[in-house]
Amino acid sequence: MKQSVAILGATGSIGQSTLKILTEHADDYQVYALTGQHRMAELVDLCVQFQPKVVGIPTGQFNQFKTIASEKKLSPLPEIVFDESGLVAIASHPDVDIVMAAIVGAAGLLPTLSAVKSGKRVLLANKEALVMSGDLMLSEAKKTGALLLPVDSEHNAIFQCLPESYFSHRHENKQPQLGVSQILLTASGGPFLNLDQTQLEHVTPAQACKHPNWSMGQKISVDSATLMNKGLELIEACHLFSISEHFVTVVIHPQSIIHSMVQYIDGSTLAQMGNPDMCTPIAHALAWPERISTSVQALNLFDVQKLDFYPPDHEKFPALNLAREAMRVGGTAPTILNASNEIAVQAFLDGRIKFTQITDLVEQMLLQVASHIADSIETVLQVDRQVRECAMQWVEKHGVAV
Ligand code: NDP
Ligand code: MG
Image (cartoon, rainbow, N blue to C red; front, side, top):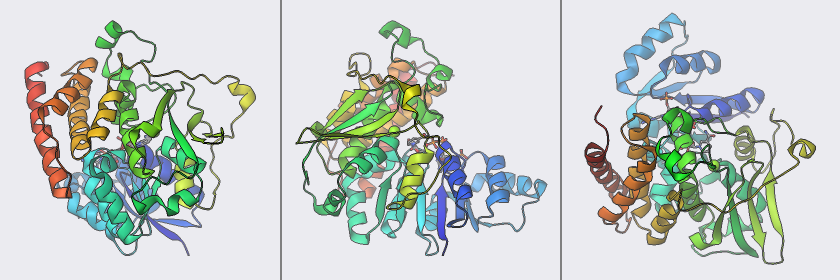
């Protein structure tokens, strides 16, 4: 029988790659629901092509969706659900087997958690949701048996390099080392790897969004440029693989061919390699423990020839150490990091602050806002709101007026 898939964030980069794979495996998967936020024309096109039963949009986009749907002769019209509660309902619907969590940022937290609480197979792209909720999300997965599978290419690589028995221990709240000595989390270094501090002051949003190896949404592209993406991924890895931050070493690897590595106590280092295309980790998470084909070209090592590795420059890119510190502090500190970063990235994209001010703002919020125990999702959401307010005030004070 076909597996039924809901794609939260279907209009985005990960959403599109997921739909490409589903098209190639239409005998095994069917689209149950698609969601979008701003790009209604694209969403209607996807509805015409994939005929989902349900669509999730913001209430404010209803008229636009209806008009475009009628222009493009979308028939039959899918059921339309609205706002966060609609996304939460899609993620927990009994007819859904697999949820692709590909909304960007904190907006994805409740829908992703809803999928976890309903015991779904959850393909996790939305790293911010796990950074914010950490143990709260993992303990829900433990209760319901939800399968939380990493789509982020590095975490998917680590998942592939770890022994399978690692995952049967994952929920035991201990560090099941099973001979693992270290995780090597690779980072491309982003588009500004070779710029100096003064040049970094003047980079534009367009330059920041032009990633050398990957084609991605704006927010993660800016995160890759500041290395905050690697900081969020460090936290994501600690949660997904039940390890402390000191087990994770970040390695700059500009070619993005090795997607991450696992080292063992016997001297072995296992690496997962491939051309940089998100279809590979998405297909892996979709079919695991089986393998399915993708149109990604097999790696040709004679073309690659050379792989480089460097330690990160923490002076130029302070984001990594900010994230490491937030993980060390624990509790709501990762939520403070994430919320302030989301506001900072948007302010940078809007031309209100300089690139280098993104991490200034995050650092200030980590200093100003007290972190406490993340005892419930309500606490996490409340801290998220509080930090956003403080961060916006910071932008008002230190940024350019628009
Ligand atoms: P995009 O910006 O391309 O897509 C984001 C999706 O989320 C879009 O469908 C967008 O809708 C939707 N969305 C945006 N804001 C909201 C909101 N407030 N409520 C509901 N939906 C919303 O991002 P990516 O696909 O690049 O990234 C998605 C997630 O996956 C991120 O967390 C990112 O870190 C992670 N990821 C991405 C990778 C990549 O290669 N792209 C790699 C690894 C992880 P609309 O477009 O209609 O506005
Ligand atoms: Mg990644």
